[in-house]
Length: 412
Ligand SMILES: [Zn+2]
Image (tube, rainbow, N blue to C red; front, side):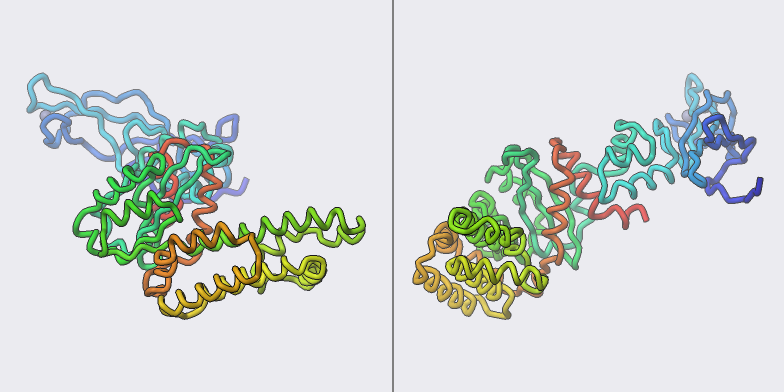
């Protein structure tokens, strides 16, 4: 058999034996080369060997696809200073007490968890659920450490539904600063009082660094923010939530129209309308030639759907445009007038939302470039939402989101 030598990268040990067991796992028996430890009572350095503890087995990084275990018998030292001469077990730097893995291995598992799920990592690593949870618990904090944060810039408040049927909401509070997203909290429910209490708990030093707050279109959130920050912070209703609302209006009209067309058109002609839901949701630049053919046919059968589609895109264009807040307000009001004149009712609900939140919606146009809207953030939240589905413990959720956002930089 061809053999290679590789360094083990675990300091302070000497290898006594290496063997491969029946399962093909590599078992390394090692011995500490460090003499002495610190007394757990007085903290003094002690070197009087008392005995060796029972052997512990620690999972280490795999080698060539084989599981690796390090076996070691920790030395126990006795203190000659403290009364009763208590003993202390020596612990080496590359593992933690009560962990069945080396730190290098635990960090590997944490990297595997980024963008993945606990159960998936369990399968890949052949670990139990509790073992993986234990690793998360040992390395990932369950709430924000304010002292590690320099500035907040833009606060984001989003809601996540943890179960089907939009029950069991949690509120996710993030900071978006320097193109980075930091998780600040995962709060139970979406009550105004809970959100308000959290926002109020932000240290004064950091409150001063908030430029804007970007929120889901939800009255409780917006009012909580208003009450805590007053006029000091610009409150922006998230434009992607707005887009979803007017797009929903279009979608409802599409459903109605397709229902009508199903009755009126021959089976063959109706068949040509397949996939319209996705096509209408796509960005125009992403449409294929085939998509455009379907759209052309759809709009020929339903001119009002074409009108609604165009109005939707015009509103998106306003949000994409480089306008001041007052210009944007004017443009949106003009858009609104055209919707009313068109006689379309599918945007009715959206129009009343617009009336109510016009100010927050158009706050988006203030310093949109500098307010640090992180590109791709909404997608990230969407992915997290999908994957966190079923995690009902807010502390666990905080850990998972934190790990997703920071995992690679923490455990690179
Ligand atoms: Zn002592």
